[in-house]
Image 1: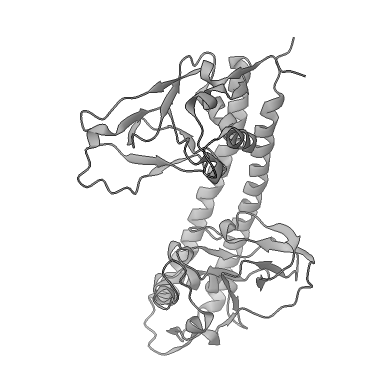
Image 2: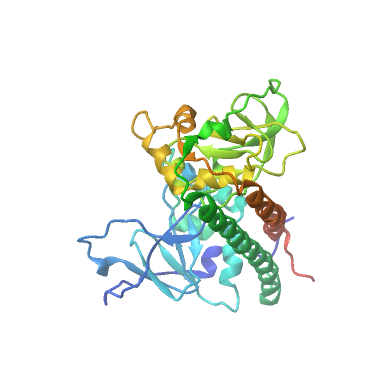
Length: 378
C-alpha cells in the first residue's frame, strides 16, 4: 500500500550559506556519524575564518561524502544559538516549521533505515557519496503538525530520561572515585608491593567452541563511565574471558589512551562471557574489592604507567599484562573493607540505571521504526 502522506525531503528544506564575515568568536563544531555536533579538532592556525559557515539554532549540517563507506549520513540539528562550521558541510533549514518540525525531521534521519536507503543511493565507488538532489528526493511521512508534536514529545521524554540517568551515574562514579583517591592515592604509605599481589590478570576459563555465549566488543566499552553499552549473544570463537565484577581494560592504542575501561555486570550468576582479544581482564584477589580494582584501572598514575609500557608498531601499540603485574602500589589496604561497603550500593545503583537506559534506548528504536507506519486518520 502506498502511503499518501510520504513526501520528498526537498519539499521542506532549503540550503543556507551564511559565512563568518564578521569573524564572530563562536564555537567551531563538526558532525559525527552518530549524528551529533562535537567541538572540532581541526588546526585553524593561519586559516581564514571568514570562509567558515555560520550555523544557527534549528538548522542542520550534514556530510554527504563517503556515505557508503561509513554506512551513515553524518547529520545533526543545531540546538544551540549559533556556531561556526567548515564550509565543506552543506547547511540547510526547514522553510515552514508549521508543516514540518526540525525535531521530527531529525528523528526520521536518525533511523537506521534512513541510512540504509542513503547508502543505496550513494554513488562513486566503495566510499560512495550522496548527491544533494538524491538526498532531497528521499521521502518521509509528514503527518499533521499536531501529530508531529506528539511524536517529538514522546521521543524527547525518553531522551531526557536517558540523559538524567547518565548524569546521575556520572555523579555516582565521581563520588566513589573521590573516596578512592583520598583513601588509596593520596595516602602517605611508603611501603609498596607488586600489583599482582592484589589482582589476577586474565584469569583462565574454558568455553566450548561455538557455544552461544555473552560477548562484549571494544565499541561497547565507554571512555568515561563504567557501564557497557550492550552485551550480545554469539557463538564462542576466541578472545578474553571474564565474569561479573571483573574490570576490562583496553590494551591497544588509542583505546587505552582514551580511557576505555569497563566494570562487568549484567551477566548471569557464574556465567563466563568473552570479548575482544584487546581486553586485559583484571580480577580482585581475596580480601580485595572489585570496585577498588576498577578505580585503580582508571587512576591516572596507573594509566600513565600502562601507556609508557606500550610496545609495537605505530598505530598498533599494545601493553602486555606482564608489565601491569609489576606496577608498584602502596601496601595500604586497611580501608579496603570500608571502601567496598561504600562502593557496593553505588555500583549497584549505577547498574540499575544503566539497565534502565538500555531498555529506554530499545524503546527509542521502536519509536523511530514506527515512524514509517504513521498515517493520518481518514
